[in-house]
Length: 369
Image (cartoon, rainbow, N blue to C red; front, side, top):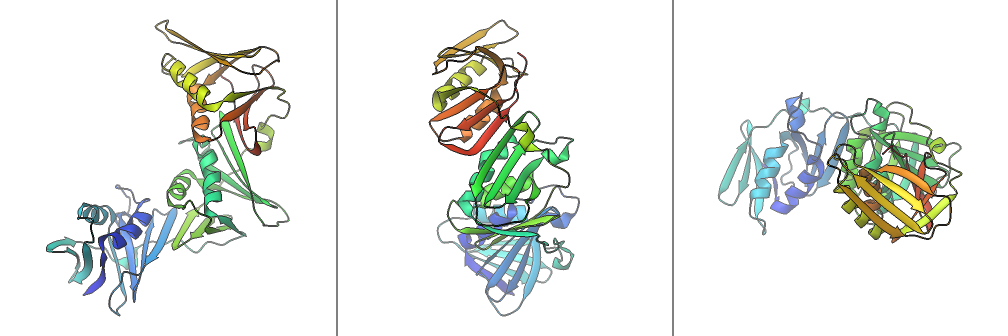
């Protein structure tokens, strides 16, 4: 019985949308599959890894019968990707206990698993609902995601803090060595702020899925789950339990030694100096003096690099050390021509901001060189 008939592209798009969270090795074999539920012309595609669930629908169904099945995600997507792309018509049909994919004169028989055994996350219980333009939400995540920790024993750092308060949505990420914060305006009015920690994997998936448009994203946040609904996609994720550090205490308030520097020029100097830096620690020395920033690096072979950049600076001399990767992460993520650095001393936290906006800040702890 045929239950899907459409072009290759029409079937591949929803499969790729939901297939991003499916991993090859699974404790439960059915988690390597995509759940398909057909009602009339509408087919719902769904995947989960028990932490995240992605659903989308597409009008690719044929026939009046309702059909539910699960098919191996990697194999199905690989087959469709390998087919000729120009207007190839494909179909899926059930034949006894198998599902057959047909494309022209080609036929591929796949082994489904029972849809009744496919796990689904319970509906998210929302404490806060807010509508945010897609590109605004994506911008917030893009501006801070690189500062999230990776496999840190402090599990609450392995994600991004999303804070909703009166007139503002804020994203914060830190790995203990650096912190990135970005704000965006919203119309919501709350008696007190509400915050959740979104897992690292969820952030990376949302960055891939969110369109660069003003289309609204309905965000529903609860104490255990968060849900994002945009277009025909429904993205649901568990939130990370734990208490995120008080980021307001980390942001320095009295950094009075300030200069602006051209972002592209600084990136070039950092990349060149990094070539001769210690491969393990990737540390660079910054010497800030009147109207000059000198960047130095050395390694165990006694090789040395020295870069100089002219800046407008009249304060006390500073001698600092930085991990060059932490600097390149943030500078490569920004788009403006100049960035502002401010310091309190050679040992205090460094604050990086944008001259024309106070919606983003990056805090970086110095290292010993």
